[in-house]
Image 1: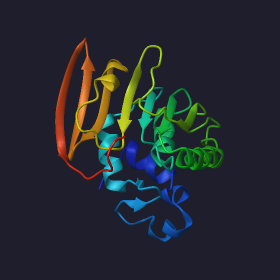
Image 2: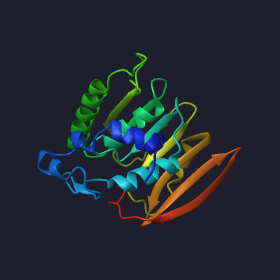
Image 3: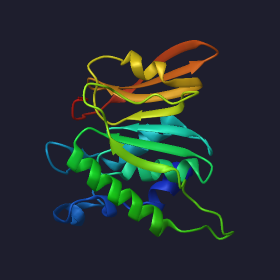
Length: 200
């Protein structure tokens, strides 16, 4: 129903590349799909809604918390373009290694645009998150933070990692939140109900 940068990026990064072999036949279905260890690949319409709320500009620095298979990290790499930076974090080491391999393969397959420029950021990576922490600090903060797991409450640590201006999108319990930092002020709005695995 949309024809925008998010739709274009999602078309350019096929979900099937980021699913276990047993789930690839279901890649075009608009539902969450199991990965392993209780993790899921998010429903495409949910990913699109979150990315539209995030409003990622070219050249942005983006943190992707709960990166899983690497699909959202790859889409974000496409949205930020060649000048941007994306860091995906995943707590499960096995899933993180698989997601990092998926991301690296996707970036290689992405190739240049018609004018010879890279379409996606070469500074996109997926790493293992540190147990007991949420997110990772960056000098100057992150322009955008995406969280693909449900927190019990708004993580103040993540808000503190945002640049000013900056935007954070995450589910809290079953409600999607958009947190905006601008001119030193923090605002929080809600945007519908969704189901996610818990943020650990």
